[in-house]
Length: 206
Ligand SMILES: CCCCCCCCCCCCCC(=O)SCCNC(=O)CCNC(=O)[C@H](O)C(C)(C)COP(=O)(O)OP(=O)(O)OC[C@H]1O[C@@H](n2cnc3c(N)ncnc32)[C@H](O)[C@@H]1OP(=O)(O)O
Image 1: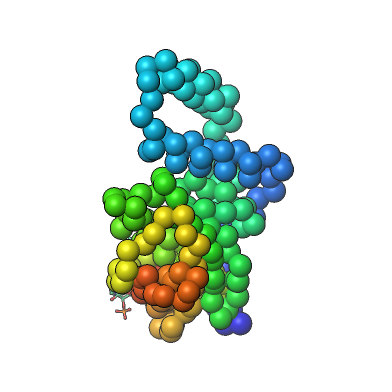
Image 2: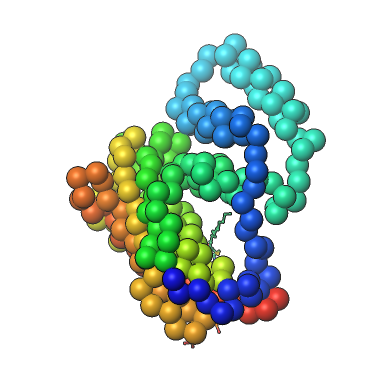
């Protein structure tokens, strides 16, 4: 594994440490994802709307007292959970994580709909960008910022169909890590591919 001698120099970027969570945490995140799916799917009558609003306000009141700063919340820091337990991330599960590359599987859900049954084009850079962050992390590079990210949309990205995304480091030049990835369906058909440049932050750089 190509562990960089400057690995611990993350610039001003937070160091990610795995979070320990209660067993119900993953269930809560999945329930919230279901709410997201429903929120973009329903057309409710007034009484159902009022009931949903009251219950959501109650949920907000339960959660609000527990807001903590960025590095304290477990969201995004539970690698075994889909999307590492972050609602922002695609709810995909990492199945390979080493210096040769990172592979993750999952589905785009109703929440990710763009139009005509296909995923919104903007959700693919999110999927790739997070995969690239993980890929360079697995390669032993310091956490860096994405300088550019290029996506080729080869086919429509379907909802609710198992897909696999796989990325690897192509080359390292000083602070620069060049990474590429493919998104395929289970028949091995290419749906999209992407390449990116990640630049290692200088000390103190945000
Ligand atoms: C427990 C769980 C763990 C989980 C881990 C989770 C990980 C997940 C993490 C998720 C991760 C998500 C990550 C995110 O989403 S990060 C969020 C999105 N990205 C940003 O916000 C970045 C904003 N940009 C910047 O901060 C700066 O521009 C950076 C830092 C990128 C470079 O500015 P800096 O002033 O420092 O450097 P430089 O300008 O001297 O350039 C240096 C070199 O790079 C070359 N260059 C630069 N830009 C480009 C370009 N566009 N095309 C081609 N080349 C470019 C440049 O020519 C030069 O090359 P050379 O002349 O030296 O050969």
